[in-house]
Length: 347
Image (cartoon, rainbow, N blue to C red; front, side, top):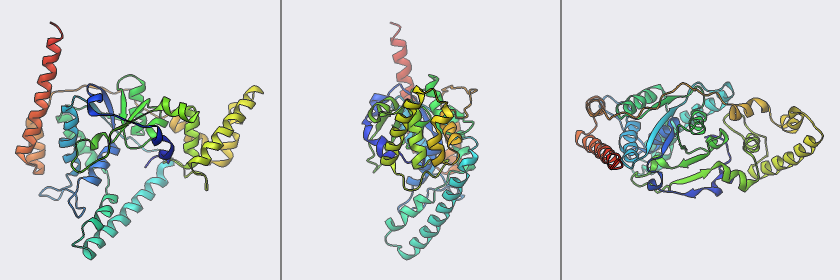
């Protein structure tokens, strides 16, 4: 879910296209993307795709068909996986688990009550989706066979993805949430993994941190303060404070800090007003501004291991050999064209 700041961030987004992203290195928020696949790639009544053994394969379908569509368009993807969550996220994770359980109950109930109206149960099925350890392991295995690098984050995947861009190892972050901006990602692209999906009309859009700062008249640090006031995955926010009120409070605080700075007050004194409003304010602020990240990772885009992909998807999980072969051939064709262009550059 992330921070509740979409209302004021979304207004500054701008449309883009896959063609504009060709050749760019994109750090993909894996947790976010896998959840998207699991929640949307389902049968009409909400039942996820499964193999003959009853194992869910919706995420694998998303990876082989949608992700490879992006690769074939010339994007260089790197998937970033979540590490150990902060203890401050425990309540949010517990609440999410409870919502999933309730959604699962309502889904089963709706299937019985409205067997001829599957759309009434689909929304509950979506809300019951869960990215568990098996899903993550499957995803890493398939991505490795596809030659797509995976990075294991120390903590939050979005923080690690933002770090890759800050370090110059990627150019933008792909995520549906806006937390990546709070973690310092200069550019975030939304709806990327929905591109090319059947019946999906979500348009590609880009959000730039600098543009958000300029439009709102805030620094990244103050944007983090705003998010903390309305609520993040690490704190519930201040009761009765919405985005617009939070913006006013932060701007008021900004003016107060300016006056205090002139009086040479300490940083702790400058934050005193927000500390009184938000429990664990400094701890939450540190999660965003000084996140735990891994500096030991390797980004190597390898060749597609076609036979291993077929063995994994077709033999282990009952995917269509014909469809998978067509996807692999499309990727190979893109690779050949790319190599040819590089050769031509030398003449």
